[in-house]
Amino acid sequence: MLEIKDLHKFYGSFHAVKGISFDVQPGEIVGFLGPNGAGKTTTMKIIVGYMSMSSGDVRVNGSSVVDDSLAVRECIGYLPEHAPIYEDMTVLEYLSFIASMRALKGSRRKERIEYVIGVCALQPKRRASIKTLSKGYRQRVGLAQAIIHEPKLVILDEPTVGLDPNQIIEIRELLRAIGEKNTVVLSSHILSEVEATCSRVIIAADGRIVAQGTPKDLEREHAHLLQWQLRVRGENADIAAALSGLPGVIGDATSVCSDGVATIQFQSDHSEGEQGFAPGLKRITIEGNLVVEELRAERPTLEDVFKTLTAPAATTSAAFAAEEATLAAALDEAPIGGDKENQE
Amino acid sequence: MTRTLAIWRKELKSYFNSPIAYVFMVLFLLYAAAKFFIWSSPGPYGAFRGNFFIQGEASLTDYFSVFPLVLAFLVPALCMRLWPEEYKSGTVEVLMTLPVKPWQVVFGKFFAMVTILLFTFVLSFSVPWAVNLMAVDGLDWGPVIGGYVAAFLMGTAYCSIGLLTSAFAREQVVALLAALFICLPLAVAGTPDIDLFTPTWLSPFGKFIGFSVRFESIEKGVLDVRDMLYFTSFTGLFVFLNIVVVEFRRLR
Image (tube, rainbow over all chains, first blue to last red; front, side, top):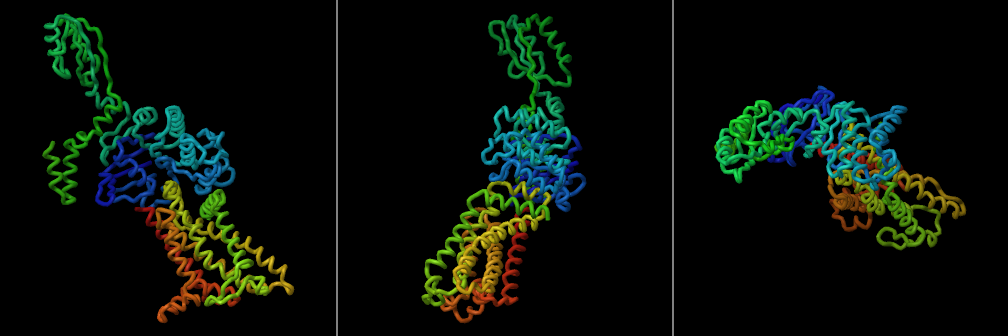
C-alpha cells in the first residue's frame, strides 16, 4: 500500500529526514511516533505530494508520488496538522466542496456525504458555520473530509492534538472505525493513543526510524526495562547476603537495609520470563530466610520504550553513528561524523 | 472542469459570505455614479467639463472614463486574499493534496473574480438605463456596449494581476501593494496628463501598455482587434504565470 525507501529531505542545509524506509500493508493502522522535529510531518507531506523529497522513493499503491502525483492524491485522504478548513463555509458546504473536488457524483455523492456526517457525528452541526465550531468538531470535519472518497490510504497528522480527553476518546473510536475499512497512517506524540488504536508503531527520532513493531512487540523487545520492586523482611545480614546474589539490582543491594526491611529495585531480562525469576525468589525466601512483603513488576510501557529510543543518547548508538559517519563523509563533513564516533 | 467549477463556487461563496464582495460592489457603483452625476468629470489637461446634468448630453463616456482608475484601486483589494488566505489558514495543504491540477485551481479563482466583476457591471447598468430614461431621443447604445466590452477586458486584466501578486505574497497587504504597484501605472500610462510628463522616447511605450488609452478607444466604439488582443494576451500571460507560481510553490 505504502512503500518508502531511503527518504531524505533537506530544508536548505538542514537535514530533516535522514533516510526513512518503511512499508505499510493494506488494512494496517500504523502509528508514526516521535518527538517534535523527528520528521513525521515532513514525511507525511511528502507522501501526500504536498512537498518534494530530496532523494528516495515513495510509492502509494505502486505509483510514485513524484511521477504519478495525481493518481496518488486520488487514493489518499489527508488530514494536515491542526485540521485547516475554510472558516466561512458551513459543514455541509465544505463537505460538498470536497466531494466535488473528489469528483463524487449523483447518488453516491449524497450517500458519501451523509455517511461521513454520520460516522463523524456531525449531524447536529451540519448547517453550522465552521468558524463557530469547537476544536473537536473541526477535527471531525477534517476527518470527514479525509475519508469522504473511501481512500485506500488515510494519512492523519496528529489527529488528536489540542483535544480534551473526552474528544480524544471520541476521535480514537472514530479512528478505529475508519481503520476497519482503510489503511491508516497517523502521527502522534501521544503514546497512549497509538497504543490504543494502532496495529503497528514506527518510532522516529531526529529524522530516522529507531524502532518499529506492534506495541506489544516493542514492549517485549525492551523487556530489559522491566523493573521489579521487592520488599523483604529479615535479618540485615541475611538480606545483604541474599540480595547481593541477585542479578540486575539497581543501586547497592547491601545499603538498602534498615530495621530488617529492604526495598530494592532490580531489572530482569524478560527472556527468562517471570517463571525464570522464581528460583531466584525461592533462594531469597527459603535459603535466605527472608519474608517477602511485596513483589511488584513494573512493565515497560510504550512510553518507556519511546523515551529510551528517542533520548538523544539513544539515537547515536553504534549503528547510527556509523551511518552518520558514512553520510557525513559523503557530504564531505567527515570531522563531524568522526567526532561522534569517538564519543561512542 | 468539475473541479474548476467547484473552486469557482467555493470562492464565490466565500466572497459573498464575507463583506468583501459587497464592499467592492458598493464602492465601485457609488463612486462611479457619484462622479458621473454629481461631481464634475475633468477632461484631458484638467479642462472643465461639468457633470452629466451640466453637460446635458446623453453620453456615458464620462461614466466609463472613471473605470480604469477605480478598478485599478478596487480589483487588487478584491483579489488580495485569494492565495494568502489559503496559506495563512493552511487550507492550501488540503487544496493542493486533492487530485487537482494547478491550472484548475487558478482558473477557478480567476473566474470567480471575473464573475464578481461581471455581476458588478450588471448592477452598474442602472446608470445607462437611467440616462436612457432621461434622454429625449433615447440613448445611443453602441458606445455603451463598447464601454462594457472594454470594461470587461480591462477588468479581467486587473484580476489577472491581482491573482498573480496574491500567489507570490504571504500577506494580503503585500499582495495588495504589489498589485497596486502594477495596476496604477498601467491605468494612467499614456493618458494625455501623464504623457505630458513622459520622456519622448518613452511616450509610445506608455501609449502601448496604458490601459486607459486602449479602454477609451474600445469604449468609443472603435473595436480595434489590437486593443482587444492586448487585453486578452495580457490576461493570458498573467494567468499562465500564476499557474507556474502555484506549481512551484507546491513543490518546495
